[in-house]
Image (cartoon, rainbow, N blue to C red):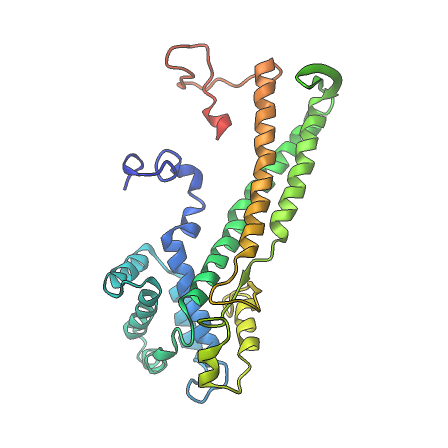
Length: 317
């Protein structure tokens, strides 16, 4: 696919704007996280003390970590090929993992993994894998993309606030001229608002559950009724990667994780975006008043018929 054959502007005209999110939030990114969750659960089960599943060797663990670390587009396409047969996306991931066990070139590790292969996806419902994968995607997007981009904007605006602290500017209220201010002070207002918004985004606890088909550990308890499955699940969810998932633990749910944290996170992001929109509109107003002037860029055309106009596309995006 090229930009000009894309159905959505997000994959076409504006694809470059989302380049940092694509590895994390694409279907390939989703599959990547599903593989991570399945293997974290599988590895943890080996350490649970069950006589039927001995702890994995160091070489086996190294091989499983590599499956996650080196997950590629080719791997994602292989899973999609399996899905054409299963018509079930999570089951396709399970089968792909088992195929990777068979494909291991270390004969000892291959035998060890194949012997325990049926513990892949043990007692899990698809939502156990999906909700944790979504959580991992959102966590990575927040930490690797959203917060760093906000930090870049905040730092730039803070530097501008200091640089223009003594530049006078005529304020306006109700669209009319008012008392004087400075350019730096107006920008400082935005900096403080963005810092508060960033803090709200960063504080949201990203949660995940792994408690089976209806949230009651039914299959788990049928297999080992005396085992503390809730404590085990909590360890898998909360322990940092690569041993666990490094997420917050959702202790109570039905089949699905309720996604309240998502609403909280998305609302915090939306509220912060309103600050950025507010600032953009203010700057647009300053440009209209002649306070600010857009820079010319060689070769760019601001209008198909009015040569004096400056193309605002860089400012808009």
